Length: 306
Image 1 (tube, rainbow, N blue to C red):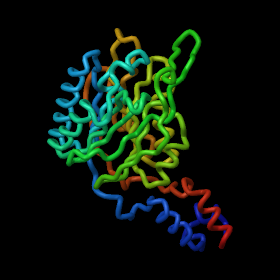
Image 2 (image 1 turned 180 degrees about the vertical axis):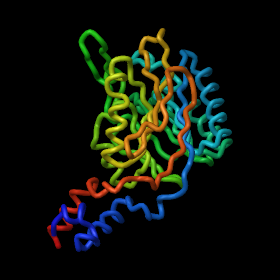
Image 3 (image 1 turned 60 degrees about the vertical axis):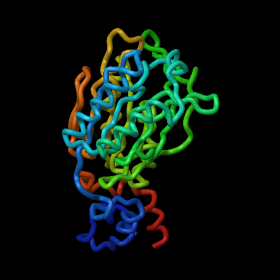
């Protein structure tokens, strides 16, 4: 069977589309699939992170409440929302999960009856430190815990050197959770540079990928928007990034510009650099006709058998 005829010719080309429909069913990608449900409002909180953990927690919870009042059903905090970002800070601010920070997120998720993506915090477990995102459902239940898979080790001569691996250990698992609106896949910051992670999430039926992230003044202007738009178009998913607000006096200066990108690659909303909440109304069933390209390998396997 001619793959090009299926993709380009369709019914008009007299080609049996059954294998293509089977692939849609396999990957949960059909626009009529029952998991493609109602639109919802996503909120990204671009928090101004200070060195005082209790202040960060109080402000984060207050902004979550504000987002919920504006109709947000899924709210994300930024990477390292309770701690300054830096290898010297991770051991000092690290907590167990559950712990004080995640307990407060659980409580506010339940009080607001929304999904809270807890950015990330330094997590301590069995003598190791991780950069971890905890997600809570509308009843306050911990739904999933994502440990950053790809640690941020970078050396750009004359600009920036940073090594998360000096203090952190990598995670070793994929992380998704289901909502009444869509399935969500999680990554943290540097994870977005690895295309395979987004591909796996798309194949597992995710329609929204959320990356709490703290790019900097070197990587931000170069790759921040580029990577988000690439992941969105390649995988036909929405991509959202939640950054800390920029603090020019910090030892690590975050880029800011929390963003939501559509499956078309369109930037739906982008924050500035200051503390703020940005909102985007997401319609999970809105995707492109080029879905078959996502399933090329599976299609080819089916055609070889036909």
